[in-house]
Image (spheres, rainbow, N blue to C red):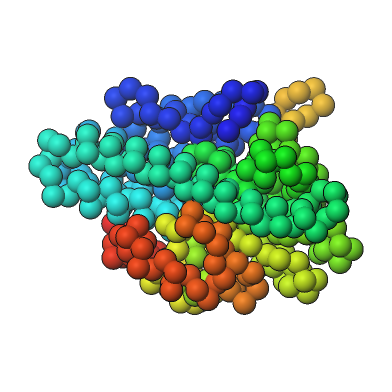
Length: 377
């Protein structure tokens, strides 16, 4: 997508197995490009959320494993590097899925050929992600077009939570891809952007990329969404997901569940956009079985921003000495979700397995045993 009018991706290979990424912890105040050239660089980038979003985490981990194999392509080196990367973020299924996919691709090979093969597989995952996100955009844009036909010329108002745009993937995004495709087609769209505390990915990242694309948007506090829905100011909700069960429960950024409850109470369609690789076919109860990441409480008690003199500063916003809990995700039960938008099309939650579990792409992920309990790869 665009930054300052130039086509840009979140990650791109450079020399000797290294990659360049956009450091998302410094957005929207600074567009900083960082090189990841060691395994620990990749681990830190994922854990510290220099890269974030389930698809991009998976792609980054794939490149990290490929780079690690340049230093040690042995069976032990492969297992050790995969395990090190797998510990970084527990909730997003794409991390373990991508590591497993690279591992399965290189394990039968002699050590001398593993690094190049792993790099090729990482490139393949990258390009598949771009194609999948564009396809999600195409399928989702039909829902927005249908809403537009009911608006009598008024903009389609879409509420989104967190950042599921191109910054969360390699390009295009998941929940924002339909918005970008709709805008390409001349559909009048306006996006309500939840700030998404505590890391403010909505206010910082979603608003940044929507602005760069020229899409009309308004940042709102996290608790405003229900009010907007009560007053008919939201036509549909579009969110992403980090892990989806086979029955359609979806884990996404904390606060998503509350938006789904408000949407159901007000008759607002609530759609989840995610690639099929985000579906964990071994799980059937998202609330009970999906591991929820708990992050540093400092993310709740401090906030980073730009001061009046232009400096970037971190400030304490909480009462000194108070404890803080920082649950990073929650699970929206399938009963609250209108439908899923994937690269293969749209589906109500109850038909996910019937439509796509036998798909060759899906079956590869399912038979690899990619779940939180197998994240050691």
